[in-house]
Length: 117
Image 1: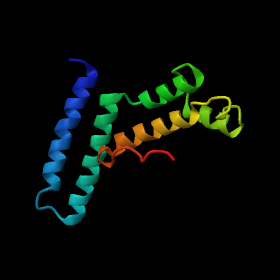
Image 2 (image 1 turned 90 degrees about the vertical axis):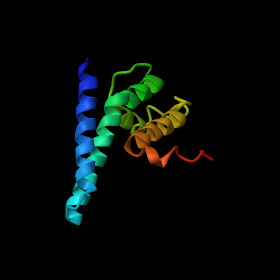
Image 3 (image 1 turned 45 degrees about the horizontal axis):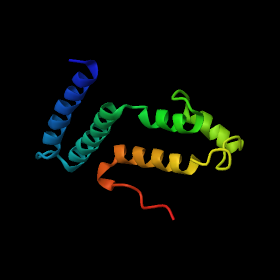
């Protein structure tokens, strides 16, 4: 059993226990805290399932042709205009895909973003 699988199983067990507590007879504030913890755990589970830095790696690959790098580099390059839609026609589409993927991990019930106009 690999480490990632074990972490996912552990998180799943904690998530079930927290949700059971959140749905019980605890005070309202305690139930709210438990619901927030359960939500955070579900985000961690999805990050582990799909790869924590996969969206960043894909974005770097699309813009720079390499998977390694930080979003800070891209932000700096966009601000300095060394990366623009003229130099990288795929920039808008790549950024939109990155944001959609991040949003889906944080709130899968939200669904995809509306189509760009």
